Length: 517
Image (cartoon, one colour):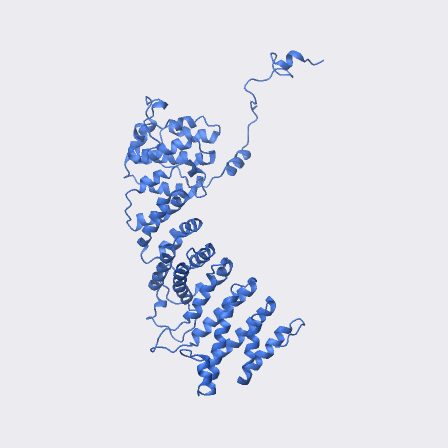
């Protein structure tokens, strides 16, 4: 193709070649000129070539001018004695394959516009190839879908070299269709396994792309009466697996289990656990298969354990998971850092749920109340305004623990029987101690904290204090709230001893050597 340097020259030249190929089979060799422009380094020319290929092969698929069936070797067919029409269809299908391979490569192009156009063109070919299959049905009513072409699209999205999260978000609109969602789950399961086997150490970019794609898959909560298919079929059959939510859940489960069985970066574990309770567990065919993953995550410690609580809560309460050391591990998560982590609100919300049962033994609840009281001595005010009502709620739910605040002749501080280093709450001897820490906090410098700690001085009211509004309270909000308070007209003492005279107190060194004249 002769290069036209004028603006829009490439578009006009490609348009002439396209019209020639579609008008006459004698001009079929012009396809090489169109495919050559796909290799251009100019993004504008590349986009024009992609649009030309989209129109060309889209028209050929609709006309049925591509070979249908197991594609034979190009050299074998051209050298044989088959008819001209068969040779043309085989030859043109090979060109179609070359075009699809190049479009797959363009998914890694530096220009996002090129990548986006290549993706939409490949998905157009998936739709057309599904409506006009290039394989023969094995039986009447056989469900056909261009799996190989679609798998190449998924492979392009799951690049091991570069971040494709933006391209995945563009692909997400196709996941609204039942067939695309189902085959995405199947293809992603296969690609993750292949890449994990190919690389001794899988690049982090691949895991991030895989998580972006997997987390974009969202299943409906219940079976829909009408299916939404991207590939149009003359008639839908209830025998097709793709038409049933039950099969989607199985594919969803295999996809996530296949992903989570590999060694993932720590940051990715956190992202998975954040969405586990509401985006993964409810859609699994067998949620209990996540027990191993969640218990391993819970044993890791730190923020990972905090995030694993949500998933474990669902398995324990809805699927009867037995976890003998659960409360011991939960007790072990209580350390000074728990007031400063990003997921503090979620942790205390779940801890409140886990400690809400009135059937818990008194020694266990007392251990949690005592551990929190001890940690409260060094906690920031915004955390104290939440944890003090939390402790009081524990005492309201479990009257047997109120002995902790009704022991006036308790031991001295240096003889406190509570052992903060003991990992087992049953052996911590918390029930023999007292919550002297709360009495200490009644002298806290922040008036709201001292007021919250003084609640134990009166009989605890029966209704619990809701901690929900306090879970995400920040230091900035506390500060802003203090600034907005209206002070009275009374004088506010600025010194412990009021100054007398302009130069201070009379016995002050300054007053002894200087006078006002």
